[in-house]
Length: 165
Image (cartoon, rainbow, N blue to C red; front, side, top):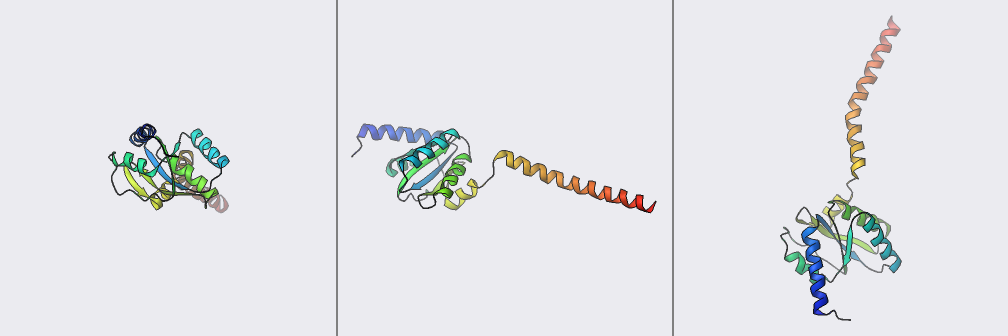
């Protein structure tokens, strides 16, 4: 069924708002996804603060062309969805989690990160960045490692002195 011009104008306005207000966007190619899976994806994304919309590619291209995004727009093959958020990493991370569960039905095809178009590989590298608490734990471990090694060395030196005395 064809979409009326008024409906297209409303969709285009919504897409332009999403493009202009989102910090990052992920372009999603999906196929043969059941209604339950789609509802589950939308619910999970909403809980993480990520919006997800399915729109015609021509309307999406119009909204993206009217923005100030640099670089070359990646291809948008097949059925197209757009995940976007104010969080820089959340859209890519969450869609990637669904892609790992459904590799035949859902694929990241590209996106926009910090005002620049990204291809699939670049978006996948962004998607694999750990959460902030995990990064903090890794940082603390890096800082703690030399201190721990120093303490072990001092303890070994103290034990050696006790044995010789």
